[in-house]
Image (tube, rainbow, N blue to C red):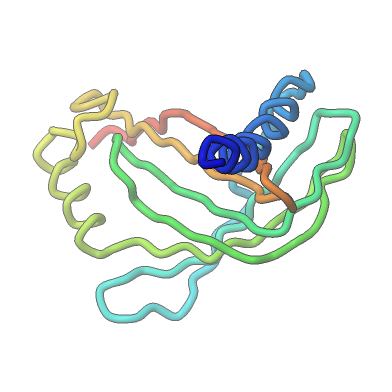
Length: 163
């Protein structure tokens, strides 16, 4: 009797993972996500708030419906800003859409990065330390109904002007 209950509970826990696993093997190309714009929002205390507009391009033959967005912006290997939104919509097949996500950056994080750059250390031990380049990464997900979500990631470097 106890064994049957354990098997039933195990099956219920494993089923969602199985369905998500099937979604990962559909052969989908990754989403292309870029920052299309940044607008200031009213800040509170030691925070900087911004509305980040993300241009999401879907290079696949099926639309991607979503019901929430999460994003993390990383500079020099350290989290710089994070944000979430319960916005919903769809990225059409072979199409694009712009999604606005409010993000928050801590003043302490920014101060740490500025001090690191001033001392030539790059702030966070990421690639490009002391080389006049700032490495960045943006990663996040579009949450879908059910148990799946579509993840995205963008990396690059910005060249600092010579002083």
